[in-house]
Length: 132
Image (cartoon, rainbow, N blue to C red; front, side):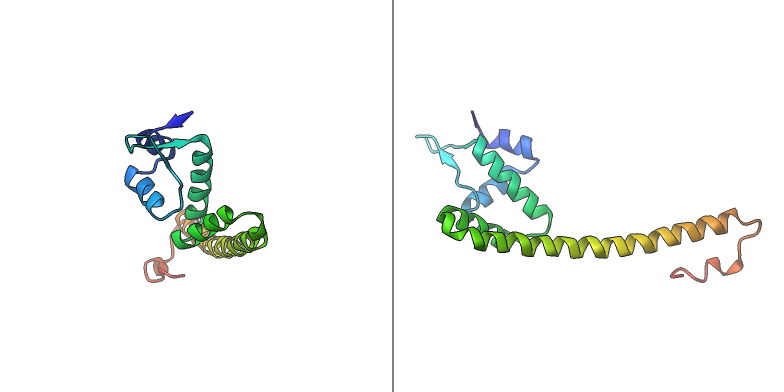
């Protein structure tokens, strides 16, 4: 089955502009009809799914292009592709750890405010300690 750019845009929540950009950058290898109209295959949608995964987890377009260039080079690049993913995984894990730390601080603040609101008479110092 094939899809037009507008169908792919609807399926992926990406704009046609973004899809064209990925094509121009060499991330996607779209196909064209004899009339020059872009179309996408199921395989293209799978590839686009990986692009979205990598992009949403902080990988740059340049790094994504490098990964797909290596894929096109063949099996001799498997080790380099693995390195890209293991490095990216570590970046994601570091980001998750930082978010978890910040979430804990926010949870503590919510608990502190809740305890102040539950107290018969809230301490006067609440408004003076926004960072507490």
